[in-house]
Length: 346
Image (cartoon, rainbow, N blue to C red):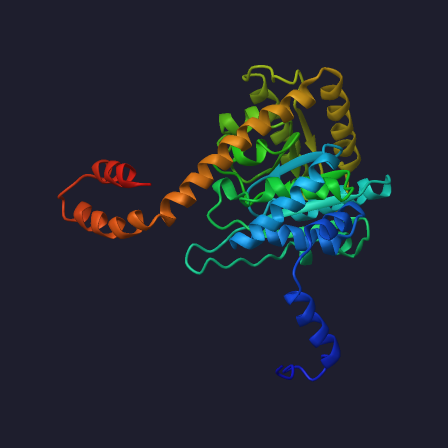
């Protein structure tokens, strides 16, 4: 093997690392390590889930099958908000409080991917230094890629693995507010919308779908000179909520203020999560909602699998460029071309 370019890297350690990477993965061993709370094994399993290699996918499904009976014990919290609203700082403050209360916290953070290079910064670990260093926390940044609504395509499976590893509270941080935030709502128990006061979007930013999904609206950075504006925004949002029909969970969404930087208002938000969990488990909504989500993800998985199979089909790959040229030449419409491809799809 080649000598490592960095002279500070121990040669024996490097050889051992390369050997371990080439070693076949035993799904039974990996799943047992995950159930024992091994975060290295958890990271490895999530990497397998995110891989597009067929062999990796087969192994990942075996690991998932072994872990599934040990899920359902965590509270899944989706957190969304425009870039710059302070999602990472907020999650760290709330996560550290939960850990102080004896909980284990996992954060599945989805980073934006470049539409040009497909690259992603994956900087959430650097923005959550205290959580990263805490043994009771697990942070997994993943690139959004072309996933709907900025939610990584395999996040749903990663949630199950985190639950199997013994994490009590799982945060799913999305790229930002968009028209497809239904994706994160369909994989979480509690949906939290993080807002900024004084950004000119108190009412303009209220999209009906987002508000209907939100179980809480938290106005962050309510500190210093921004305190008055935050209180005003809280009043505006409270008025707007009365325009919407009651939620199926019979839960009354709350509007709260906080400063994640100064860690004020975090206690109230943590208490709200506990109240929501108790409320929805008592009236049966918690379990019925998860059953509905399972149906949703079954259908979504089938659609994604069919899409992948369609574009990998040899006939489709041969005809697609020709039909695109025909569309550009005005010889056929996009709808006609699509019907032709579907007709010939095996």
